[in-house]
Image (cartoon, rainbow over all chains, first blue to last red; front, side, top):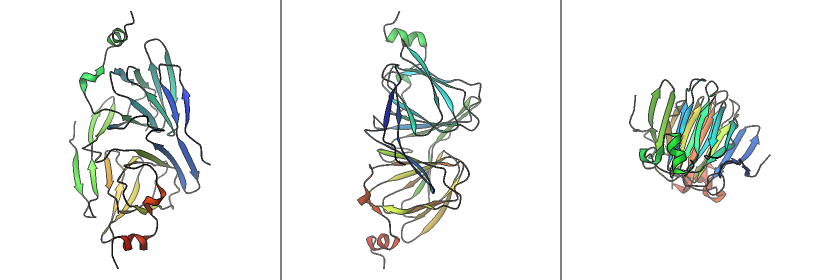
Length: 145
Length: 145
């Protein structure tokens, strides 16, 4: 079975769920993501989040310029997205589903299942000045009172 | 605890193990890979291999131009690498360990543990003409009799 790439708008800024091609075979499944389709930017950094206690909330920041895709490779997590006006919660539990978060999205992740592994692909190398770590500052930057 | 990127030569062509920075905290671990360090090429494609029966052997081909990094995100697999002259088996079981395979490496993967998830980052978009699927052809291309 081959599925094409599908895009699901999440109604929070230009956040969207990008559902990648999945080839299901007896000898194993392959999920394929390619630049320009599943990946709307050139990845320059990745990180893998692991061993997160279930009560922990991670993220809780926005990026000024960095685009990201969140893929839960194993287990499940809840991703929280917020464009300053609208909020949404999304369950990530299928590695074919990539949550695209453009810059200036406030993001958090919670409810990490046991042994869950979250992969994040990012458009920029690490730069601490590019992070907004306060929700008030995030809203100020968006000129929301 | 912060580890720097470490490189381990695998004595098979220019294959190497790239061991990425790992930040271990009570609230979860992060493994960080950046272009130019953990990723020696710009990724244009990724694939995630999943649900592989333990008796299955995957891969068994070489790439003419494509560079790859194999990261076992969950569980464990055995990666087989072969430059036409030397062969090696490498256990992948730590998501901080990326197996870099340059073009013209014959690669196979076996012994996928239950629920294992293999992430591959690749330097090129899919092109079937760029694959060498016969070991004899691989050796011919290397001008090995």
